[in-house]
Amino acid sequence: MKYRLVALDLDGTLLDSALQIRHQTVAALRLVREQGLQVMIVTGRHHTAAHAYWSQLGLELPAICCNGTYVYDFRDGRPIAGNPLSPEEARELLAVVRKHDVHAMLYVDDVMTYEQDAEHLSGMRSWAKTLPEAVRPRVMKVDSFDRQIEEGGAIWKFLIASNDMAALEKFEQAVGLRGGFSCVRSSRCRVDIARGGNTKGQRLAEFIAQQGILPEEVIAFGDQNNDKEMLELAGLGVAMGNSGDEVRSCADWITGTNDSDGIADVLHRFVLTEA
Image (cartoon, rainbow, N blue to C red; front, side, top):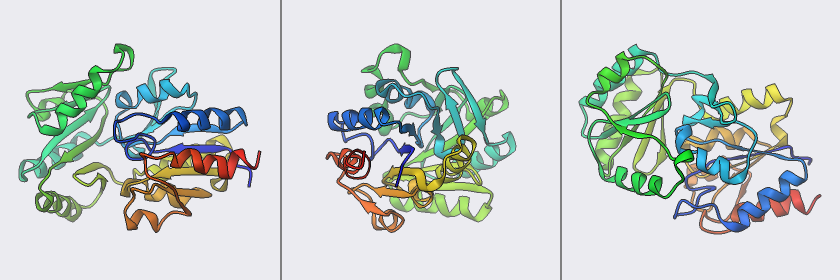
């Protein structure tokens, strides 16, 4: 099989537990690019939180962000395709958020916003401080999500976090009863809410069709439920060793965890050995 594109989730996949890309992974991705393959980031993150890794790898393709909600071209500094929440949809979701004991962030335009501080934000801020200013993610406290919505601009998604699994499940159920939204776990204690129909798999399918790349010419790596559609789409869907059973069942291959050289191992086995 002649592969043409490598699609990579970030957290729990390309990034290890220290939020770093392993040296063996960087080297393997450089080699596959030298063999003519393209490499693309497909993440649940806001583009400002993916920029540092895109830059580190020296990528050229845009990144698929917020679980397929939009495609961001870092070279031109703008989204080139997207399906954001409407103000009405955002207000509907915000009303659900207000009724549950969960923490929310609202991803809009070029910034990730929050009303109340939370434990998981401290880690994000600490990580952001380690990055050069040019690729540092924008995280901002706002007085009111309501005002943020009314000010207009693209509303990419809500991120909902809680260490209380019962509270998180109740929130998911409440959103599910409304319909019309994409509600998916991006980690054990986080839920991403976007406009219905937005998935990594759907957006990746649209992108590769525009590029003249067939699904069977794609290798995709992921570890969470928001990666399932992408793994099913790809000719070779690879689940990380830290994936749960539901994700593994969607994959063609299981590799090592994100704290191993699992990505490099797969690229050497299926691309570089063949080359």
